[in-house]
Image (cartoon, rainbow, N blue to C red; front, side, top):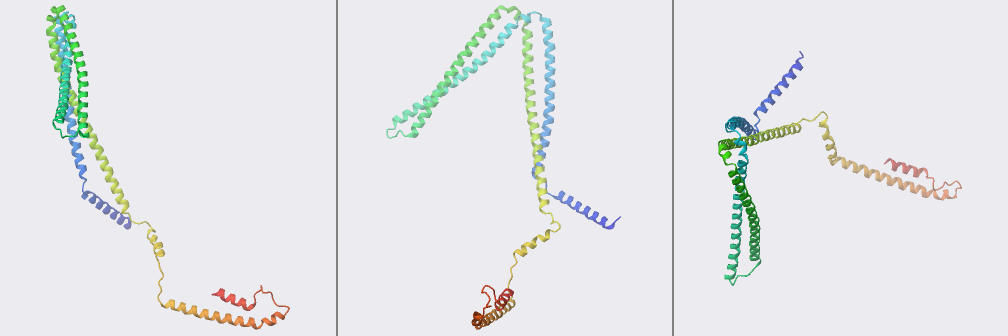
Length: 341
């Protein structure tokens, strides 16, 4: 085996072990512990409510089967009187329901009457205090209070009117139901007396089944709530986990080392920020060379000008005098010297 490769594998294993130790030593988010406790609690609740719900359903089925068997026995023993007396028992049930509705409407009417009486007393007291205090001014606040009290009186009167109409309607329905029931009672008196054990037993089982059904509905509602809490805890755990992983990824990307060639990126900044500073010696030398060059140019220019002045007379008489547009050799020398600078 290649020793270099073996050494690299050992370093990688050591680095992985260190990362695992760091992850284990990393502090656990306290929200995770809280959501785990909620998850465990909701799981216990789900198991408990499911067990109790199943027990209530079994009791309901058992009572229902028992009621069916017992009632069938009563029908076989009593015979035809059960069917003959059914109109009376149905009318009796309707009369009881009408009685309950009439009692409820009576309570609503009495409540509306009390509210109306209190609202009228409030207005009466306000008017009495206003008349007793001569110095009191009838300001906007007092007017607003009276308007509010008057509005309450009007609303109470409307509520009383509605409740009174409902009370009369339910009372009439109850009286009609009672009258119909009594007529059937007189007509079917013999069948009613004979079938009474059957319908009394039926009413007893009916109440028992209603209570068991209430227990079933109650456990069912609690089970729904427990399952909703369980799902909420799971969603919270997933969101917390995603948040932690996102933070770890951002930290890993932020601490990543520079790639190959990344160290050369700073050179442009060094060049852009570079400033040439004079050391004094080099600048003195440059100034001296410039002064010497300027003096030589001045001297050369004066010499050329004098030669041109001396030769101007002869050149004007010479028919071969060159055109002014063509530069002479001396002026060309001057231009070359200037270009060389």
